[in-house]
Length: 214
Ligand code: DX5
Ligand code: ZN
Image (cartoon, rainbow, N blue to C red; front, top):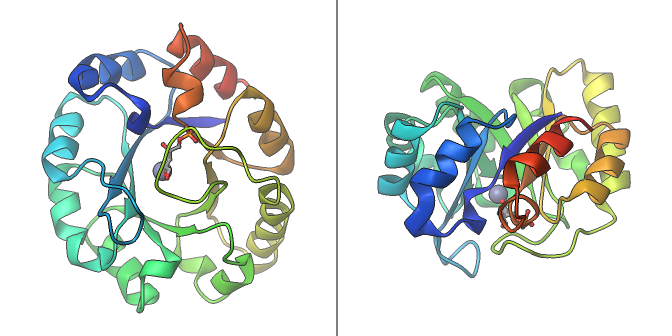
């Protein structure tokens, strides 16, 4: 299992140390949540922080854009050092164009679905994306409860990927802990984002190790 610890649950004064902990852990990615207070009712980190994190990070940055008009930030995000750009299906009027622009900029393109958006909306883009991120909470805040419908939804996504011949990975974000992570692993998830479960633990690297072993 690829683990992508979310920095949203970190004490931002300690960000460098948190990145060092992730660098020395079994995490495969570092998840950065960008919020604009418009697409979601919260504001988090922006480009200067992502740039600093990228300089310190030894793992690829998995950036989750919870903003309107994410297409306006493709080259800026690439220049900050992001490896993966996650854009919300619900925020993109011209999703195909945005996915092409992300890949052209040299990043991996991921499309994120809110809990209420069905997997079938991806039918005509699934072969053009590197990853699909299913939100298992409503985006905007860490520490929320996992929405159980994500498990059957993940199975529907797995079937869509298999029948279309896509190579897209499946990432899950929200309320992931060892218990929900085990169910997600059994249902076929490839990447687990975990904020609170990792960073509120006394030994964060141990939680990352346990999630990676799922
Ligand atoms: C929520 C963010 C998540 C968040 C997950 O909108 O997209 O990445 O950090 O936090 P937990 O793992 O605590 O649910
Ligand atoms: Zn996220």
